[in-house]
Amino acid sequence: MTTSMSSRQRFLAACRRAPVDRTPAWVMRQAGRYLPEYRALRGQHDFLRMVHDPALAAEVTCQPLRRFDMDAAVIFSDILVPCEAMGVEVRFAEGEGPVLTPAVRSRADVDRLRDFDARSATGFLGEAIRRVRAELGPDKAILGFCGAPWTTASYLIEGGTSRNFEHAKALLHGDPATFERLCARLVENLVPYLAMQVEAGADVLQIFDSWGGALDAETYRKALLPHVRKLVLGAQALGVPVILYVNGCAQLLEVLADAEPDVLGIDWRVTPADAIARVGARVALQGNLDPCLLFAPPAVVARETERTLAAFAGQNGYVFNLGSGILPGTPVASMEALFETVRRCGVRSGAGALPDTLGPLAREDVRSLLDALQRQTTTPLAEREIEDILAKMNAVRAGRGSRPPFRPGQTVRFAHGGFTGLEGRVLSVDESTWKLCVALTVQGRAVETEAAPWELEAL
Picture 1 (spheres, rainbow, N blue to C red):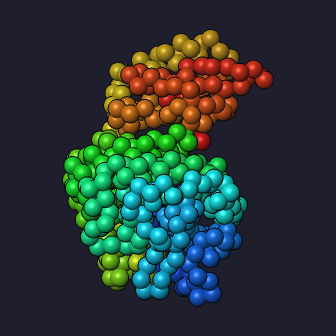
Picture 2 (picture 1 turned 90 degrees about the horizontal axis):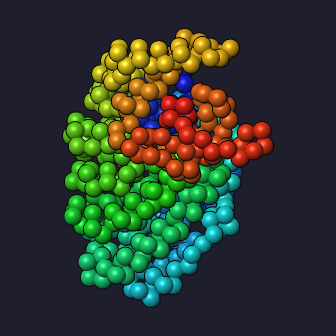
Picture 3 (picture 1 turned 180 degrees about the vertical axis):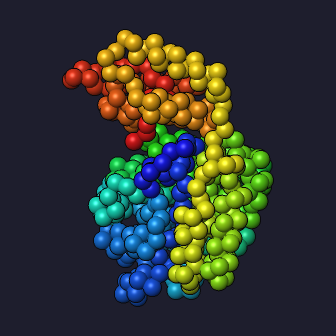
């Protein structure tokens, strides 16, 4: 069992399905809405002003971290920021929600959208992330995010929120070529937008498909999955874990797992046991306490938080969260009870611990090999280093399923072996053996070397 992890280490490890000391936790939309200090600030500035001002966005992002022992800060922004950068007017009408003009409903409308340079058009978001990192330091994780193709497209097509998505579904089914082109344009712009956030300091990226539950599985697989998968893989190529969250996703679990996110965020309607049985061997899971429960007394919040943690105890790779965004007016005392319960009950032990897939014979074989190698060196490994190697090997076998834990382009550090402490970049991954080819610089000289996953840690 890994001990004494920082919040950032804990969060990243859970996303990658590696051992953690306790369940990491954050809350969707935790930056704002329910905190009195946020409402005081919001009373002085309109919403988009706060999104565009790096100082205000950073302040709102950090407010909940000052109150609660959260493992991650989600940057204060909005999934419609890229729509604005693509030339659509976005405004938030009081009591009405977002209004986008002009609506995008034809091929000509799609063609009129402009591609944007994320650093110049949305650089305020990158600056907000840098400010948050400066305040929080290296030990807290920072989440960047964007909207998924369907949700972003539906806002553009409907011109705002919708109950039934009449215009969006009409375009999807009636003019699939135009809908396809719109999604492709969005992904082409969203990947650099996410890259800008990672460059600024985001450790993890979440893709929000807030309205994905409005689609059936067959339609999602045929019309949306190729675009979602391209967005996920483009984000993963930046070297960070990717969370795909879809509200109303019960009918979509297998389709969403096929998009290959590191983590699948599930809403409060999904039974944890069902999600674990259907996709838990393929992805880490995040969720899924009903946000309405936070309006109950703190004792009830604590009980339901504990129940949720227990329901996911057998899942290898789990992040605690609500099943959708925190609601305005949520009592602060409920959040206090929630995070106190996570700290008290979220220790990963018993059913939630990694199974021993190595076994005593394999462990002795590894020890014999290490003993033979140590006879050839003057700096033998300490017992704790041997145990760490065995734990990492076990995590690879037990915790990462059939997918390699690292991806080409990812920055890594050698935690063991002759290059310990040096950083490199993954060039390729052999998915049959999980051997990696890593490029690094040794004494000023470019070197390529083969490495095993347990020798490396992600940065």
